Image 1 (spheres, rainbow, N blue to C red):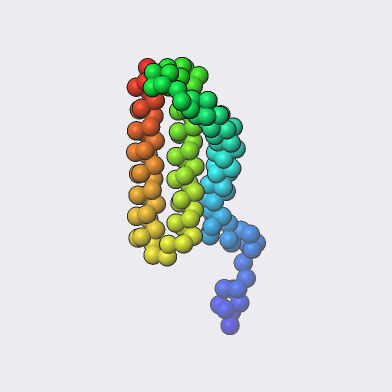
Image 2: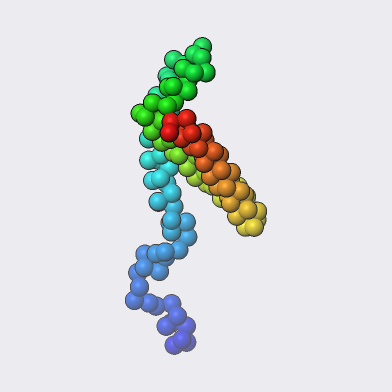
Length: 132
């Protein structure tokens, strides 16, 4: 009886016993990063949509000259980086929520991150080849 009583009593609070366990481990950072990237992408996407609309009907040379301007190149690189980071983080949340088998979940997350990295690098390289 004495051991059973000792097993159920502790000096730690309920919060102290659960701290560091469960989904609260790293979810806050992920949640904030999603909010920050979405807030940053709002004006960048608006800028990109307006810029693309203004380039409608422009020649290839005019479009390349527009991309080659330093301010446009920087904004394009920021849009590319934030977009692919936001996509990878969003897809990770979806995969974590809906894929049940751990190996399939990890494989899918790694595949999405690899694809996003490759597409972001290819896009950034295209902008840099024109701008530099």
